[in-house]
Image (cartoon, rainbow, N blue to C red):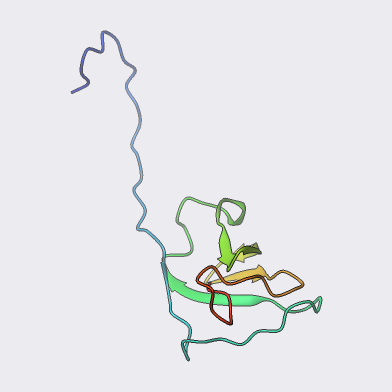
Amino acid sequence: MLDNVKAYQKFGNITVYPDPEFEAFSPSTKIFSGGRTNDFLTIGGKYLTDTGFVHNQVKVQIGKGECEVKSIQFLLSCKPPKNQPTALGGGQYPEV
């Protein structure tokens, strides 16, 4: 029921998608050297396909920098910044 709605349109069915789930890196710290043109960071997960969103709606942070998402299929692939970003928590390496 819609509170105080005088008129409404009949809407079609809506589809509810599960939230994507991403896997932790193994080992927990991943050393990555960006800057080369063919370097990509890949992150595994579940429910990455047929989720109702596209790659440009997803944001991946690496510390204070951004990893540009290039594709989401069975893995999320993103292009890291050329230089290592600063860690959010003040550690040696930035968090993803």
